[in-house]
Length: 254
Length: 179
Ligand SMILES: Nc1ncnc2c1ncn2[C@@H]1O[C@H](COP(=O)(O)OP(=O)(O)OP(=O)(O)O)[C@@H](O)[C@H]1O
Ligand SMILES: [Mg+2]
Image: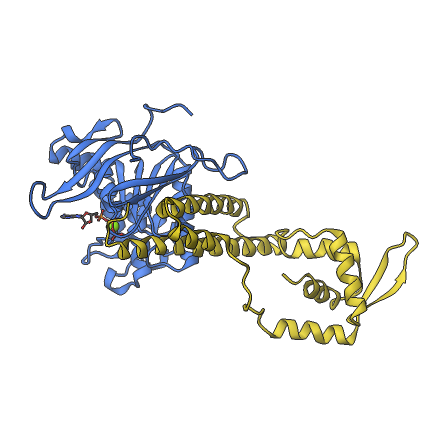
């Protein structure tokens, strides 16, 4: 396959993130990480705790900026943007499932899911209908009126997933979205994510679970901030045989 | 894998020809374990020898009908009610390879782990793709196939988890100076 440079929704090139640079507590959270994700592609990131998985997602979603290298989101280089412009781009283009969920405790499930759409400027009634549809996608349409503290861990997780999927988000970033779910509910979430990506979104997923990573087109494995391996093919569902290694991770290998 | 008990359990439902048993076995286990007709006849021969089944008549085309005996029925009941013995798991080549890699000079254990993990992930991707081709509300044979695929997925995942665990244990042992 030829390297595709246009049409990628996310392109990370030699992205690195150092915390506390030049001090005794310096941490290289991520080193020279390169990855391109096109619409229709789901990429999974795996690796031990502390290997840099959440860092990849933070940089991809513009929640954090790299200390070296470049992140291009939807054709725009994040490094050159003001904090406000970066936030606006993020809000418009990115759906994010946080590792610690980040639900607003004072809002009900459906209000939590409506929030990003209301920030998009969508009328309340529309936002509400979309939020209910998103909750239905993750099988908890009946729990919309509950507050986060009235939901189980797995139910809260599904609210967070619905919030990331609502509206036309072109990049979906999910940090351990199946952590609190049993195997069947986890599979249901992967099906929803997969369907969203097949419908044209780009997806980047962090998981400890090989079973869930297997829903992705490519799997990138990290250790100590380095890419140590990539498995996968370019297009999900094409060809019967297990695919060879054709990952487009470039320059990330030591 | 006990073809013997599987075939006997099918015979417990009624008299069958050898080719019927083969067809039914594959349909009802999701076609995941193909058996050849030779295996079926060998197994039937042994079941008859052991008094668990018997031949009851031959058709014009030479195909024999088999019937379960009372001893055979008792054997099937025992099979359903007792767990499959776990005493002798198959030798697992991956674990042997990893164990040897640890003590082989010049072999990069982490690289061995990574290679094995890649292979497992590829297999998992293939199983997952196969699973996506099964409808959301599967019927009999499809449901059997789905459950068997799930079994393969869980087994592969356990292997992947063990490889992750090896890597972490290794890192802990060498105090993070791996590689
Ligand atoms: N704000 C920060 N200040 C200092 N170090 C940080 C900061 N954020 C992350 N790190 C460090 O960077 C490394 C990578 O962290 P990251 O959160 O990306 O790991 P992870 O792979 O997501 O781990 P987990 O599986 O536990 O969530 C870790 O060593 C972590 O301690
Ligand atoms: Mg993390």
